[in-house]
Image 1: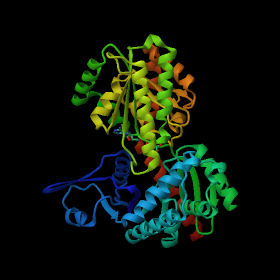
Image 2: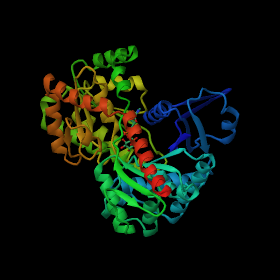
Image 3: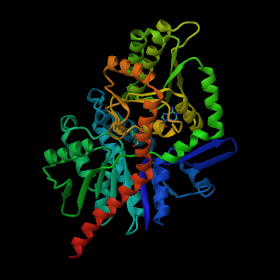
Image 4: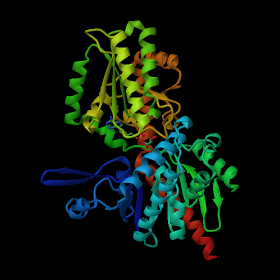
Length: 473
Ligand code: ADQ
């Protein structure tokens, strides 16, 4: 028996230099959690995903690195992958599921490529599947996969988890009918369909009822071949890893450097992939409002804004980057002076130690997505504050706001509100910081990513068992 995890990206990095190829398995949250579950339950793990490297490199090097689990890359033809990933997954599903209908650029060709890619991956998974295996499918790239696999392997245990929001019926219905049905039937191929929040779960069940006419009882859809249970499984982080990193030597040194650099200032910090859903332009507008409304903070605060490049080949992402950089230029030009740069901007990824040093130097983390499935940055910030210092401002549009109840919540579209909350957070006394962080840390310690993976996979086993029992009767 083994766990077969399917996600678009493989938790693998391949670095080629002139005379060397270096392969490492990544220690990202999801990979660590599934690996820990497989070790505890004494089962193997195989990861299936789309290769972002060529077949020859893989064939020549696949046995030359330390493996924690097996990897099965799927090699898609370049044009098919582009249509599947950029044109349908990101320019249709990502946009619509985050409530940006005007950003949707639907084409039939994109949808055909999506279906084709899902079929290729289904065949790959089916080829390595053995009875008793548990298949865990991740995210919006593979909405059709549970159904396709159910046809190929009728008795398989299949879990599906969506990492982004599932939109409400009024938004979802915008998709062409054939697409809506493909998606809903696709997900219903699983034994468990998991979402970050109850709101998303309710949206999904409502869409199934209204569009497919399939009713549910207590969130369970009974179909001829199997049952599907829809439920909420809020993802989390490796709490201990972020908490203990506070004391890493390198983090301590970097933190000292940052604090010295801004010794007479308070630090506001944010870090995101550059994505229009993360609300960066709104955030900058609110920061500008804050500087105007609370001029006493002039020269006494700095906003460290870190963005990591993402999906640069898609037009909307390039447009957003230009808008952000224009706003930063305007704020620094209008509000700053030769001694003070209000927004310090970095458009590059940061490594783990730097990330923790930034989290633990910040007086305020300002996280303002206009829509987000969960938002792990918010959880990472809270976990890393072993010193119980700092304040979290968090958008109520992020799934994380349902878990982090002691955060200061904001409406990301309300610049005035964000400005006022910034003033409140920057003035928050140490006692209040401690009380809020302590409560959130207690929650995160209990509900970490290992707990999340265990709950999800146990539920998949449980629901699958109900079907096997009734077939035996
Ligand atoms: P993402 O949209 O990628 O994930 P998020 O949950 O915030 O968003 O996770 C981002 C991760 O990347 C975090 O672990 C963060 O530390 C890291 N990161 C962000 N910016 C970085 C930078 N500049 N340098 C280095 N690291 C950076 C999707 C959904 C989310 C959901 C997750 C998990 O959109 O809503 O929380 O999946 O389900």
